[in-house]
Image (tube, rainbow, N blue to C red; front, side, top):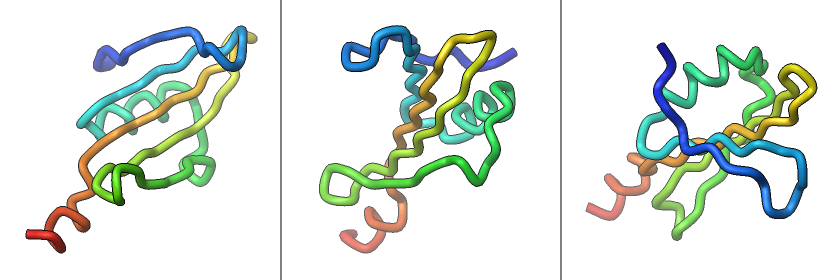
Length: 82
């Protein structure tokens, strides 16, 4: 059973589903694998002054375009501040 993501329609890209996962990169990884997204296709960025890690990946599943997004605290940056 996959963890439930937040699912929404992209307001910028009509026809694309956005799956957002917050505070659980393990859930992001489970969805990435279930969607058949190659791990090397995942992009890693940060936001909020590098305090939040953001992972993004794209897939096409049954002719539907999907963006998978994972947000989690950037542990390395948080430790550097502490």
